[in-house]
Length: 398
Image (tube, rainbow, N blue to C red; front, side):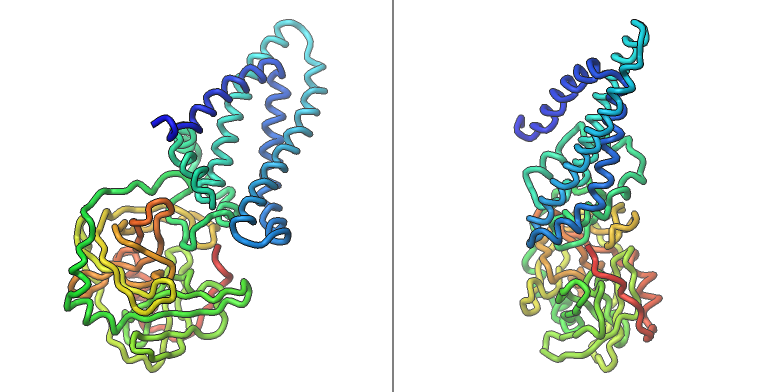
């Protein structure tokens, strides 16, 4: 529908207007304006987060202010550079040189607009502002530009993207696209009364960590995968100091220490001396439409399993939990409700085995969540199964 492509229509109009403006300004002014805008934007995305954190409270307000600061910085850079360009253009003489300068300005201005649109589109694609991110992700023009940009471009401003993102979960895919939804039937609620779930639930625990560096109390889920060893997400214990509290569904509590920390996969292993719960087994690969169970402690509630269905198995390329680099992870996209607190919990088969580890939810599709496959987490499971020495949990994640 037309309203789904408002951004594309605006961009088409702007391309024409910028082309006309570029013809008048010329190649030199247009090029330097673009360089100034990009340079100012780079400075802006570096200084905007600390300014926003110091100036206002609240994630939405900080994200909005950060975007405004980045844009103002880019605009200032453009004004300064275009002034320099105007001085240089006055030195261009001769009809042929002026004509070439004007034609070059047309192409540079139009191309610059498209690159700038991609730049800001990438920054806000996972932001707090749903109408904006919906238009950006649905834009054929911006996605077309994204397809031809080098893959490294996704890491250029990853830290800023992490600052303005709206979800409490890690980002699964790169800024644009990725969240295509495979249609499958609704989950079968009868899976919540299976014998497999009843047997597995005693091996599923709540994990509570304290990260004083960012003044956070982080809650998630974990499961026993080896004697006295729990697997959860790295973002559940990121920046934690001291031991984490591990609580069973029976109300028993133990202290656990992180002995494996993998921020790229988003996996952590805790060693919990004295924990007597049996280890769960990993399942073989799930198929599309298979029944599954999201098992965990959503929103600080008691143990609350949810029915799910496998949408797809895919390789997701996106940032690690610190937005410091790109990673490829094998994941399941599932139809089911994944909420804060489910992170690190097992995605169970109906016989109580582990298909994978819940770690994220789709930003704009509430009925879609994501789990790392059993195959993806197997290397960490092997490395952490007998580990007892504590390791660093680094800093808080974005």
